[in-house]
Image (cartoon, rainbow, N blue to C red; front, side):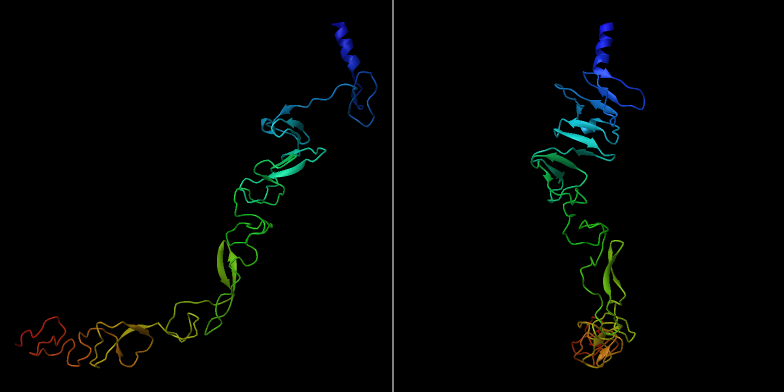
Length: 276
């Protein structure tokens, strides 16, 4: 037992607090600027061999040999990173969504790119293949082009709203809370009978107001088979009803006297009732 302790202290030379610790086989003092000085002519230091996910509470500065990536990894306080190695090794970043852009917080160091890894770290969302640098910005509350801004510019398409005719004023499309809106303009609205060009087509009060029907025989009743028109004033030759069953004969209309002539003079659906 005594010889065992002598052997241990022959290999490890401990020093008082405030000084470094030397581990060697010749008992020499450690380098003054080092807290731990290890020296050997025929042995190396073997770091823990494991995987980064096996360490539950890593601390900044921890170093291991990762048996999956087969490189040394160190923990920078937020994530594990590969230590630099000499040779043709390079950094590769994970491209899980397959858009050609890597995620900056998932990196390995290897001689060539493994599957699903690329040589850039420009992707801001590696779960969405439509989000990466160079894509058009959309009005969707997402940083589509990964420039750090959300819905910037004019993601509504760059087209002005309003047509500068009638009562309308041209505005600018912009994106607010994920919705494209017209800012600073008066855009098309339903046409009203108000003397204004509500729908911005250059015409005032068209297709608005009351329904009118043509009265070709001028008996005060509109053609039951004709289409209506909308107008804010009654057009000439039009009436506000479509009760005439024959708009080519002024003696045929609702309320007209029934005559024994084989016609439905009063438009009640019956012919010559009570007169023949």
